[in-house]
Amino acid sequence: MNLTGVFALFGFPEDKNNKGDQQKKEIEDFQKTAYFKVSMFKKLVRNGKYFKSQVVKFLSSSNEALDIKGIDEAGEYMMFTRSYFWIKGCKFRSKEWKEALYNHSDEEFINILKWSIKYFQDCEEYEKCAHLKKIQDIVEKNLKVIELKG
Image 1 (cartoon, rainbow, N blue to C red):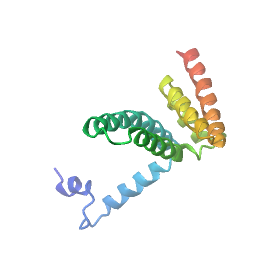
Image 2: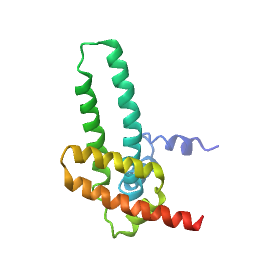
Image 3: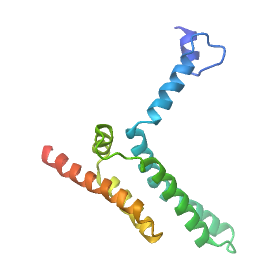
């Protein structure tokens, strides 16, 4: 067993071969990919809905004087605006983005897109709605293709 190789996985500064720097660069490069960005969009909405409900439940039981509606609205704002950040750069004609959307195409993704569109409609941010609707249309077409193949 090569201990230098094992410890290099953790990127210690005393590493002379810079494997930690290489891994950091690879992670940074992956974070720039369309696949990562679509994954983050889905993850933030999916987990955000659950997390927000848990926080509201906890706070409402711990202090009845708190404005739970305000906390709920702030949580939704943070969740949807942060998740949109990841997908706003979607380039519909890019092969990379097409593949990323295809690989993420499922009913859950469609529901997440619908929730996001509904949120931005209520905020009257129609440019975001239009962008998300284009993505939704692509994902729905992908699902039809996937069903035909399967």
